[in-house]
Amino acid sequence: MIKNIKWLLLVSMTFVACSEDDDVVVHNSSDGLPLTAGTADFSKYVAVGNSLTAGFSDNALFIEGQNAGYTNILSQQFALVGGGEFKIPYMADNVGGLLLGGVQIQGPRLFFNGVGPVPVAGTPTTEITNHLTGSYNNMGVPGAKSFHLLSNSYGNPAGIGSYANPYFVRFASSTSATILGDAVAQSPTFFSLWIGNNDVLSYATSGGTGVNQAGNLNPATYGPNDITDPNVFASVYNTLLDGTNGLTKNNAKGVVANIPYVTSVPFFTTVPTNPIPGLPSANATSLNQLFGGINAALTANGLPTRYATLVADDGNPATVEANPLLIVDESLIDISAQITAALTPVYGAPTATFLGNLYGRTRHASNAAATRDYILLTARGVIGTTTTSAPAPFNTVGVSYPMQDGTTLTAAETLEVKTATDAYNATILALANSKGLAFVDANAILADVANFGISANGFTVTSAFVTGGGFSLDGVHPSPRGYALIANKFIEAINAKYGSNLKGVSLGDYRILFPASL
Image (cartoon, rainbow, N blue to C red; front, top):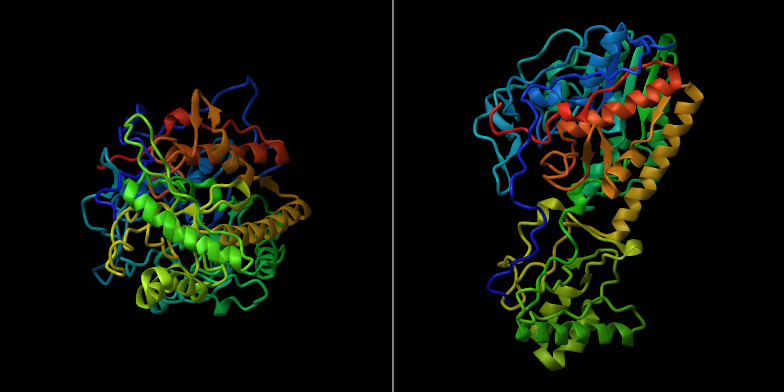
């Protein structure tokens, strides 16, 4: 249908070179007052959480990424006021990725080659079966959901590929250890807890292919992309902060953070809902006739219309026309039969039946605030391509062939994620207050990064993909500078709660992007 889709390029492909030195330098400003711990005791700091706590970046975990994580930055600041050693279960290299029995099961990290994100050269050397011994202050485990922190099978190598996590398998104290148990066993005097992101994130990044498990109190029955029931989350979070066997044991102090809305990160906001340029006139006319006929059938059946009027290329290179993507929305009423009936006189029964099945639950993507859809970053490569699943002229993805489930977080799915996130955050705030813990409103912080940017030390951090400085190339996890910003926000919360006088770090001492070679 379209020989060459030149959809709107979302990121300037001009590489923004980092002027920072290659080595991360901890910088402390001074207000003339001495550094103090206040009422906190940082001598034994243990960090509990998921990939954010681990220092995951650029779609991988690797040594320099672990060093640039917010928890390591915090530990460096704590060391200035009596904090002890912060042991990290380091990966074996800066390539990233994992091996199981010599077979690569996760790929290397990404780097920006001047055009886009691509994997670095090299093969991972981190072998899961090479078990690390000893205890580790950084208990961040990529992929962990809230209830995984309590699972006594999460570190069992026999369960890799199903119920176990390969990252935790590497350093779990035993095959039946729990993340919480290994953390508490270290008798922390201070802890950080940032967990719950993955309880909604995997659903969102999969384009809503999982199930919202609200009402299901048995997480053992959940799929990997499901949304955790808020009551399950609340029960788990209570256990994590329990004073007898949880992180507040022995009156340990700590800091907790809530869950950002997934729509604050560039994985969901980089690709617009209307990246299709002006169509050739004949194609625009034929599609408007087709979708106009379906709209008419919808109106006749008392249903809202679903399709916009597409615009043609006006021939002026100085103007850029924008058309919305055609997407599948499983929350819609299936009108396959009505479409088939309406189009049979025009296209004949066989073609009309095909089109009815193809378009029964489709519509054009919306950019309106109340009904916003989010196109996943991973879907950008298929827009405007042709599929073998349909004949021409109904085979151009996003134009005449709908973007399939798994490429889009629809407005209905976004609402499910937001509802769960709000419930989790209410639990986190209530327990932070009841336990007397420092609280970081990560949701508000990431919203500010996405909406306005946050400025500090002469730098403004935004969520713009590649160039904004806040996020790494996977579009979900922070960059080193983003992690430094987060660390400073944690420090602000700690200072406010415990009367400490930690200074934080300068954002300018942290990279925007990692280079190809480290």
